[in-house]
Length: 155
Image: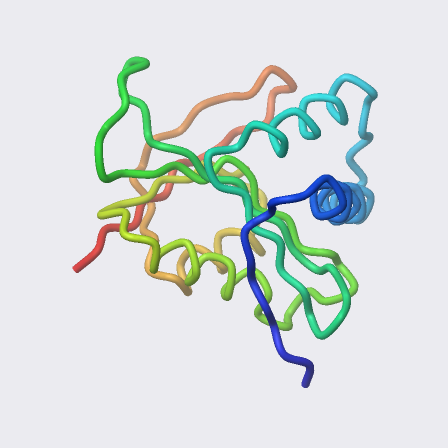
């Protein structure tokens, strides 16, 4: 089994690799990537407080973007929010996502939150495996999909 290496994104080349991972994951989920959405993800990767790129062996395999958690627009010190996690479908099941979350959890935040679609069981299993629990908060996206919030707290 190849080694999984997670590192902070610090170059345009790494951002391009992360965008490629995002595109592959979206294609596997049959979600159309509009030019506006591609631009938004590219911007998010360029301005992220923390962006991680995972390699499975030499293959770029996962990307994660996190930021300080905001309550009504005000930063909550010590708490983070995961805004994006994507794993290349070619390596689904290889624990790339788990390694990225574990790396994030080791960075000192006391708690983390994340939203995911209620029909995304793969993501829910990832978050449950890494200690997240369902907050029972739900919302509806502009496309009508229901999303759920999960949270993790350092013990």
